[in-house]
Image (cartoon, rainbow, N blue to C red):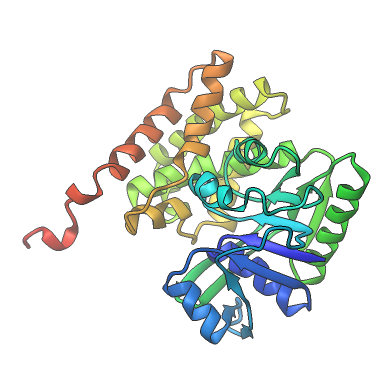
Length: 318
């Protein structure tokens, strides 16, 4: 089975590298940059928790021949790049190509379906974590379970089952879920609770819970998100969601720097529109007020649109 991964960030590299190391036929699709050039020239280095290093020869391409066989297109782009990047692949994928999005946030599958109306598009979530240490090297820093949605169409379903088995064999346990929408929302609750707040405060995930104000803010964010999730047909309990997010922040992901924090520090566009902003958008659809999520999203937008004017610590006289 031939796999193409759209993106060359930490998670695209981790997934592609693990699959290639286990013997699968996989390539990455991404524009040229220093990270991509390092991978093409020297291979990808994956650093594991015990500091062991795997060096993998991994190809990153910038174009695809029309009609070239691709069984699975795995989308691991930042959500805001979907249209710009994937539109270049329109007309080059066969109808039998199954497109899988395992991105952060909500609304990604809908965007991709508009670009590829003839293809089967499936949502999923990644339980693993990774970060780019420097060009050509990533750190593997999360070890959960991945989930893929299921489809009724037989050929696509078989490809998804085979893909899940490949990921599991490669060391990234993956299951096909009958209710992937609930899985996506459970991940969204966590992202909404931590990403924007850590980006605004420049704290690691667990450190926002050092104060009562931080815990109260987490509860307020997730309470609004649960109301919207219920309106979308997802069963969720506000207290249970808040407690699980608090547990994760104190135990599982407390030492992590969120992806949104890293984007803000590096003055990049964030995924706010599909996380807190996505909750606000769906809230309006259902007539549900989401003032806390709206405020957080608004603050992140202010930062994004004024990077050139930002006062950095280095410019402040001691």
